[in-house]
Length: 251
Length: 243
Image (cartoon, rainbow over all chains, first blue to last red; front, side, top):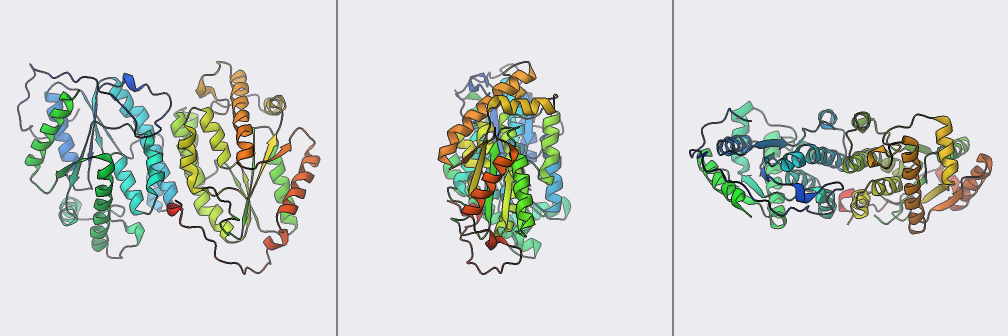
């Protein structure tokens, strides 16, 4: 699907296409009705990380590499649902949602995409690349003081992915990358709603450190692969490619 | 949360009405509101599924039949959270009597009938305190059905539970769906101390019972608009720290 990425580090070998075996699927918690887990083939790979952590670059490279190797891919991300993405965008612009409301709005968006994009793609045997998943949503809510048990119950509807790659980048590097890209910091990515500091730069650094702290906490429960995102992109791609290969070969 | 607003030391009180579509609960809560207003009591009325913010998404979802049991539950929870955080809690802090036409029990009943896990649904609404009084308008299924079917012959897709594929016929689907919701309400009644009212009675007869119970349970003069507020700070912890 994606063609704008740079050439993959390794040459694809179309003659030897790995056919992934079906793996046992489960939900994190209570799950959702009307889903037959046994019918889900494919693989679900999540890439997590802050804005500027290199998520999109790395996803584009994984996609190019997968497709070169004969695997059909689908990409999903947050705030892209037909159901609520527009309304969510509007509400965020006005910054008028309270935190349980915002949290549930995002959960609705997530559930809609899970049911309408992720599950159908897995059923069809695609490798699904998720640009962020429940962990970002949980980390943001945890920073805003929501209760961990409440969030775990809420996101008990989520399917356990085959792998979660967390691109860990220091807040200082993130700032530089965000400026290099659009010379501005995003209101929400700076956690300005939290009133940490009126200085946006200062707020961004503090907020991103808090988010990283929550990811660290979530890591113990959800077992991410922590990828050192401060390295050059090629090195990161190489590591992700090897890990993705392992995911495809898993039984 | 397992505490009522009174138990959380809020100066205001929340009164909820629950029941099937066509049980006459909306009429009863309207009459209750009028009665309180006439007495100069601070009263606020809030309806299920009425948050301006979320409405657009909900109605789009319903119109295009985009909702699944999971998103149906979540979008209504979003609507509820918005009203709860922005209206209900502040008004209850200010000593209002808040009347809710449907509260969390509506979600408990509908979402479970749609196939969501009860623990999941209850966990989601865990940020909300329990009502101080819950009136359950219990009408015979046939009477509720008749009231709806007489007035509005065109049943909406989700209202009739058509998404559950209970029957191709919307009337038949509505009957089965409402019957299942009634079962859920009846099972919840003792657990949540519903005050069960006979909704088969005349409107006036029901209203006098409702007014009598409210008057006996609450000291209405405490909620008068000109009443001086000298009450302790409520002990509700922030929503997030409810556990």
